[in-house]
Length: 68
Image (cartoon, rainbow, N blue to C red; front, side, top):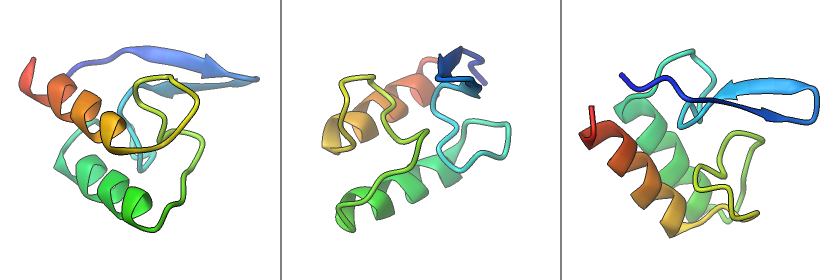
């Protein structure tokens, strides 16, 4: 598991932890895919930090997972 924390405003997050459970795993990929399909987002869903939630975030998240 990769632990890369980042800060958004006053909150700190584990990069890739889309569902906020403290771990980066397949559940985060599932949640992110659902957010992208719904054209929605949450504060943790911009995994690649480009200001949007989209397919590129899913790719970035999968890369985080396979790099460990």
